[in-house]
Image 1: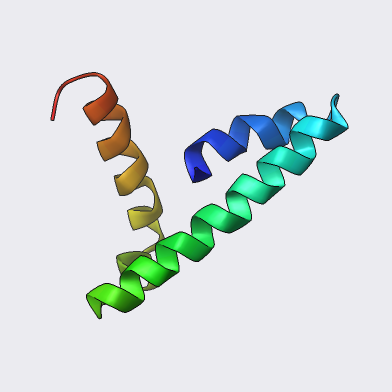
Image 2: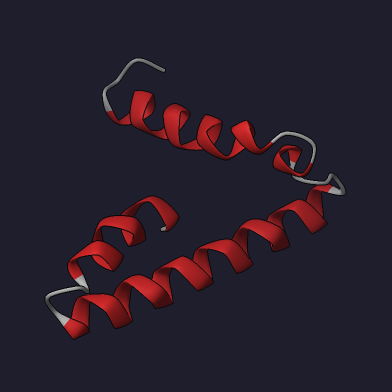
Length: 68
């Protein structure tokens, strides 16, 4: 959700509907992300190092390409 929301947020510069959808996906995605971490009982790693924000996206992209 978060990864899909970023291009939509950028498209929101031209289309306000894309901005609303992108913002909604971004917020709901992060809320679900933190709910998952609460159930796991673990803090997100990016609290320690901001570079971990990109690890999940990289893993997801590799999975979509069939590399994982």
